[in-house]
Image 1 (tube, rainbow, N blue to C red):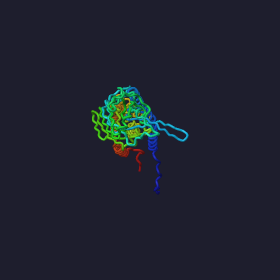
Image 2: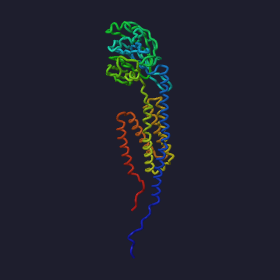
Image 3: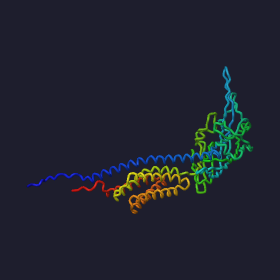
Image 4: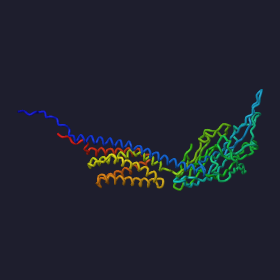
Length: 450
């Protein structure tokens, strides 16, 4: 009697097939839960934007009552003229103004900053004491009086642009050619939108064209947010010092020399007319835009970073949820404990709630302290929850330790500016390598039988 050399193949064990299918379904459920958690994640991002908008509104309200960002332009000399054109049949007259910019402009002063609180938010406001000094020269290309053009030197005015007149604390007087001139508000000027002006008779200046007229203007005004100055002189030297330790130098020119310490800053600019896009003698056309484009100055804002850092942290939410779910899934695989999909959802919601806690606490505490407190609350909640599921202290402590390391890693990334991408990429590579290593020890489909 002969034996059959070809044994009949044995069907796959139903238990292994069921286990493989259940793992696949569980992973699909976990993926669906992660997608579902994007909804509360977007709600947290919207919350951060709303709180940031409330902060900006509070700062705008303080600026409205105290004084906003200040823009200084000038001083300049504005001289009216009349141009008469005669033809064979008619005579037309056109009125306009010539604007003379100063030959030298020196601005020296000090800015005192203080904080005003509106609700939860602090706003930096300042009081500036400046002195503007320099000289005016008659330019060589100044239009001369002809039969068709008459320059009214007696109706000239010296003008100074100040963008927010609410910040003026003391009446402005202009020292001009040895005289003190009272000023009135001025809105009709091609160099700025609003400012002050003083009438001055310059009819004798043309008789001595080589004469330099000196000016001296002490200013004391309030503002918030920043201070910008236009280098309208042929030669400009601006030197500002302040007790603000967090300036942001901006505008069309950076300081040629600056020093920033915890006690404040000192900055000095040197600009010449060749650095700008407008000449020293301006005609009737509007020059506000070009002058504004040439401004230099500094922002004097409180560095509000909690919302920016909270926004950056939310961008890592998907990574935190994925790694946490992977850790819980590995626990489920190794400890042979069935963790329901609803429990995964609860863990994910706890991770999302971390960002709401972070934003709300950071409005009252330093961001670092708020991050530590929110992370400690979240890690403790999830650790105790995992312990309630598996009833093993070592496993729950392991999950808590992994979450702690993850939140520390994210915090380090938030503090890095230049090297955040490099540190993040290397960290993710290490995390992926660890996950791949431990996945090799998992029994995904059961061992094959010979």
